[in-house]
Amino acid sequence: MNHEAAHAHLTAADKRLADAIARSRRYEITSRLNVRPFDALAESIAYQQLSGKAAATIWKRVRDIFPRRKFLDPAAVLETPDERFRAAGLSRSKVAALKDLAAKTLEGVVPRNGRALDKMSDEEIIARLTQVRGIGRWTVEMLLLFDLGRPDVWPVADYGVRKGFAKIFGKRKLPTPKQLEKHGARFKPYRSALAWYCWRALDKAEANRFE
Image (cartoon, rainbow, N blue to C red; front, side, top):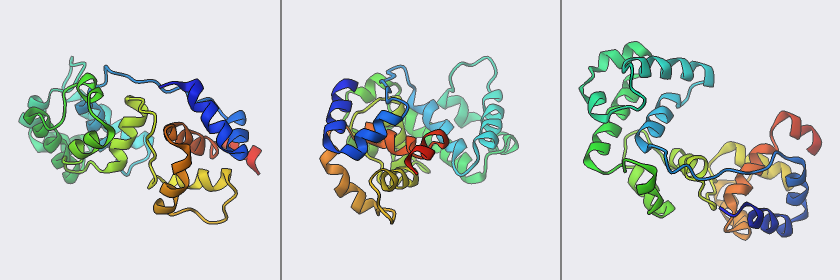
């Protein structure tokens, strides 16, 4: 990811966005090829539809089922009775999703490491990982953006992106995902940075500056 090129492109594309960038914490996400898709997605499953604090507590309990292991082992997850995960706080649907993720990792549907993902396109990764129960496009987009550092991820269904975009560009109504897809086209190929600044526009410290 060429951060300087991304900022130059976005700044030149629209003055309102340039102003937002100047006021915001800088986008500097880089690729982490040491990411393990199984671990990252397992944690995402645990965090779904929960507050950060509650999810973190549950995730710690899940990790404590496997002491002295730096990484989760898909085979060990499959061998663990559902009741142990339920006792840690995972719902039945999340246990089913976690075990499906483990099975598809062992089958090779989910690549084992970030280097394998790095050889695939964004859409190939989305198509592969959304085969897992409980993993939707948004979850994979977050993996692409924050873990793999892909430069042109544009999560149009994300509420924060939609709200931040409306705030930056002075839109009275939230754009629909379809509208946001159209609006975002002129910011290719650096829409990951655009999404970042949409989120940053909603930060409490930054938001006041846009009022």
